[in-house]
Image (tube, rainbow, N blue to C red; front, side, top):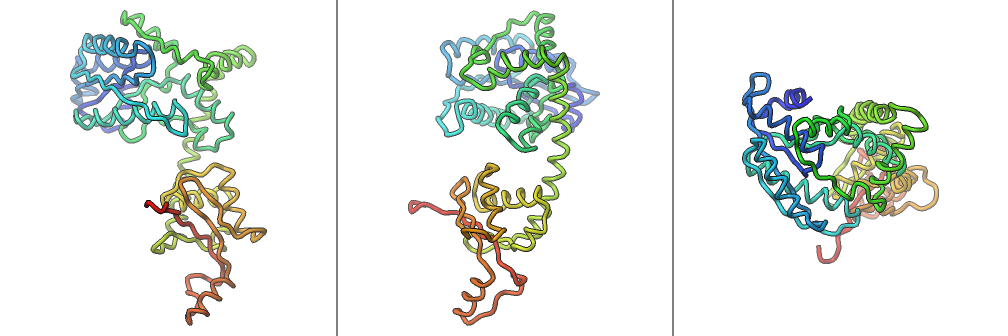
Length: 345
């Protein structure tokens, strides 16, 4: 699995293993260490460094991190860095904040050590849990597609491996693993999914549920990628830019299929500095095209306003200015997206 992941990434000569001390990442580190000792993968040279991130969120985290560093050095990985991070409070929850801080530390370590890839120890079980959480939240195809095997420098070679198999690797290698107590904390939705929901599904529906959920993610990744490509092409064709935002022709938007129309609207919001809108906000913005009720503005995440300007309004504005409606308006109204900056900005 690791060989395939590195082959797909173009055989980076230097890779970085992210390790928490848990069985999944330690198992990955031990496999990577095997290739580090050989000095090559499929005849291509490779060396392996490692990084341990201490989030400082649990009592004794510094001791766990130091012990993990010692284990990784014992495996022959070099150098092994320990990075301590401050997890800032955000509106997206503690898990998301910790992930952001961790990824920033990993990227910094990879840059400093000139590593072309960062290995993460997520397993098939993690992928199945991700899909279930997406279903529970009513997310779209992109969220249900779960974690990608490769995203930029990030590689997840173990997405086809069960968590039990990583435990077996650690037992065979006689590695002392750390089990994160938050993984069993019912305060977190992911922990409840792992400890309560998945075992119940396996019990009631039979074995193979996790594999089926992971397979669903793989299929949806292909579908989501295709739709994303079509949406990017449609947006590039339809977008019109102004000094203070972008606008899209109403008739051109209405001609798109709903799946593409929602994605194009989301791209317009992102283009002017917004965040990915939820389905409810996208529905509200898309409803402007039906010319029913308010012409807006609809507030989208990231301080973006979307509103409709009708053809009659365009003609009035043009008449007042002594000009004609621009030909590119196509005899229709438009949907406008602008970023609402604060007075300080």
